[in-house]
Length: 292
Image 1 (cartoon, rainbow, N blue to C red):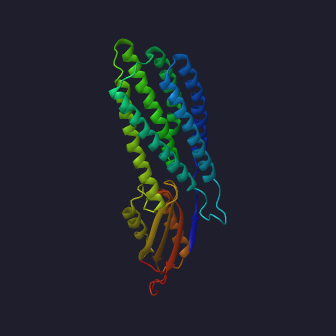
Image 2 (image 1 turned 30 degrees about the horizontal axis):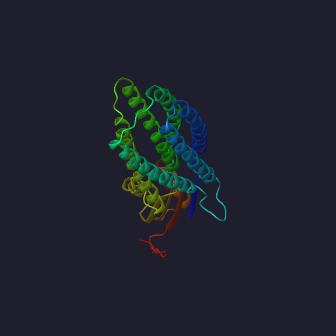
């Protein structure tokens, strides 16, 4: 057996989510002050929604921090998959909140309400700047947890852009129906991305082959190594969409099995396969471990 434990850089996922949490919490205070100043129930309602967002981000942050813990006797592969719990929780919150927004906005399509357009405009500018800064920081994240948080923040960014557009238009023209129509469009976009994120999360939990790995190309490169007669019983899955794991059996009559193992591990590295287990078998010995 040969094992490779080349765990790559964890990135700044935990730090990115913590920044999102604190900025989101700060903006809740801005919304409360702005809602009271403009006498806007809509903004005060959104402040309550964002406070719930902050609690969700705190949970996602906690799971992401736990995901950086090293392996132990309880979790021999480490805690990386705990970040998936944050992704599931956050996606669930997004799903429920988006349905609620669609429901409320749907009612307002038939009963449009007047808003304080100038006050809404200035608060929308602040909302776009703060949430936009957080979204830009999270956009480079690669973990599913960061993607879920990014979607969460993008919901707010797009929502405040909608408020900005609506308030600017309504300063000159009274069209209150624009507000709920834009809210519905944004919520549908968020829901589509939530379903995609959840699909990817459950594919990982079901140990599907990572989408980023062309398994046909990988097998071709492994098979092309000089001392490899054939390969079989190859299994490939991922811990969290970033760190992949592979096991395989190699038929070879090489006199230097260790060198061969290192050659195969080097081939796997560009595919972000950080943990490789290889068993080398002699051509005249049949596989005896439930091989396929």
